[in-house]
Image 1 (tube, one colour):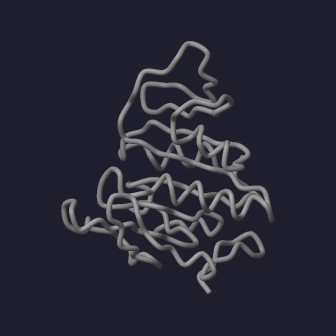
Image 2: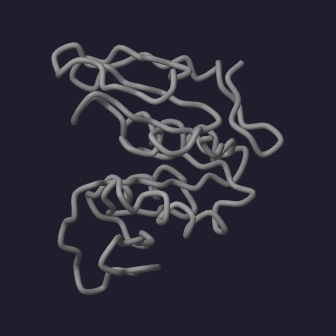
Length: 174
């Protein structure tokens, strides 16, 4: 049975440049006015990091990085939007469950906005949003039905913000 993460709002999509980070930033900004919002961005691709990177964990399986400075990275943009903290995870799907278990203690009590293509294969979030650009490949196979499938064209979309809330430590569709 899939573990639930009710305090996670998951944003995924059918490719790059569909607006996932844009939507995450909008939601972080909106909800950080009401509660502490933590951002988590998960990438299956490993990129080199500068020497002053603040690693929470770095091993041969995954890297968990705490963003602390303003750069052009999406996880840094989440800081600018109001996330506290913003975490970037570089991890293949093979080790994603292990990486998430490592950060769970620091997510407690926080509204988590997570951008990830693979998280839904292992965990059930409180709310799941899937951005779909018909110009990209078709819908990816998902292990669960997203709460929202949002059409997006060149990262332009309309998301019904009023249809979600973070209440009693859980993201909920209303």
